[in-house]
Image (cartoon, rainbow, N blue to C red; front, top):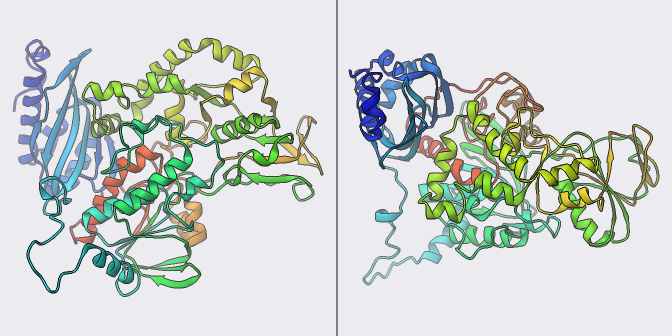
Length: 606
C-alpha cells in the first residue's frame, strides 16, 4: 500500500492525485478487510461521520481507534467499494477537500473527504438510496397512464379514493407518523416516494394550521434557500422570509401534490408496543370516531421543541388578567393599550413583544438569563451566505451540496468553524451590541463564543434572530426587567428583587421540554425514560449536559425502544434528515438486515 505520508510536495500541488491515491489505498484496505491499515490512513485527531451507510445509524467515530472499532463490527456486512471523486478536489490552507461516491452491499452513497498531511481529517459517508428500491424519479419517473383501450381501467383519482378508504381501515400502515407539521409532511412525502405505506396524523383541521394558528406577525427567520422541502423547492419568486400563513398554504398544497396520506382532525390517545409481534397498537380519534392502528414503526414528529414549559408561580391562580404560554399567543390585536409582561427573552419573546409594541401595548420583557442576539442580515450574509443564498447558487452550491457540506463538519469541531463567523458579526454590528447592552440587555455569544447555530444544536434555546424587536429593546421602546418571578398578584407580576410590574396579560415565553415528554403522555413514562432526552450533543455547555454523545440525541435514528423514532428540527433538518430516517424505515419494510452500530446510551431522562 502506498504510504500517504510520502511525497507531500507533489501531492500538495495535485489534489486530484492525492485524493485518488487515498481512495484507492483505502478501498484496497477495506477489500482486504485490513482494518488496521484502513484506520491508519486517518489522522490522529480525525472524525468519520456516517449517516446510515455503514452503521444503520447516525454516528460519528473519532480517531483511529474509533474507526477501527466501527470497521471491525461493520465492514463485512457493508462491503464498501467503488470509491471515487465526483468533481475535482480543491486545496485550501493545507486541507484537500473532495466530494466522493461509493457503493455498499445495500445501496449507493455520497460523501465528503478532507485530507491533511497525516491522513484523513474528516470523512462523511451517507446512504442516498437502496439498491433495487430506488425512488421513482428521473429516468425511473412513473409513466402515469397506460395507453390503449381498457374496459377495466382504474383512473388516478379512483386509485387515490380507494387508498383513502383502505389505508388505516382494511389495510394497516407500516409507519404511523404522529404530527403533521413540516417534519411529518416531509417524512410522509419520503415514505410515499419509497413505496412504504404510511399515515401522517395531526389534530388540526388542515395541513399548515400549525403555522396559521400562531400570532399573525410570525414569519420564518431562516431564509428561503435554507427552507426547501424534499422534491419540491420553493419557486424562484418566493419571499426570502415567508409569512406564517403563506407557509401554511404551501404545506397544505405540498401535502396534496405529493399525495401524502394525511389524516387531519386526528388525535392519538395512547400507544403501546407488543415486543412479541413487533407491532404498535395506536388508539386514535379521527374526527370524533375511535380507531385502532397497528403499525410496525411509530414516528414522533410533534416538533423538535417538545411540550411547552409552563411555569408554576405562586399567585397564578389569583391573577385576574389573561395569561398563556407563547405557543398559545393569538397575536397582538386584542391587547392594544394594555400592559403586557412577557416572561422570557428569546425568539418567541422578542417576536411577541415587537408585535405588541406595534399595536400600542405597554410591553415589558422579563429577562431571566442572558440571550444571544444576531441581526438577520448579518446571519444571512456571514452565517449562511456561502451555502444558502443566491450567491451560493451562482457558485454552484445546490441545496443538496449545501446540506452535505453542513453534514460534513463533525459536531465535535463545528464550533471552531462558527467562532470566526461570530467574531466578524461582533465587529460588523458593534454599535448595535453596544446600544443593546447599554439598555441593560444581558447578551452572550454562547459558552465558547460560537454563537447561534451551536446554541441551537446544543440546547435549542437562548437566542434570537433579530428582525426588529431587539432594536426596540435597544431603543427602550420595549421595557426591560431582570430576574425570576416571585409571585403574581391580582393585577401584577412581582420579581424576586421586589420589582412590581402591572399587567393585564402575562405571556410565558418559557420554552419547551424534550420531545420524549410527548412519549410519556402517549405511551408511558417508562418508555420516555427508556429512550431518554431528545436533542443536544452532550457538549457540557449550558443546558446541554455531558457526557459527549457526538450526534443529536435520539433524532432521526434508532432509539432504545424498538420501532420508535423521533423526527423534527427546522425546515432544513426536516428536509435533509428525513432522507436518512426514510431509508432506515424502508430497509426494515423490505426486510433488509439493519444491524445498528453504536446505539445511543441514555444519560439524561429529560
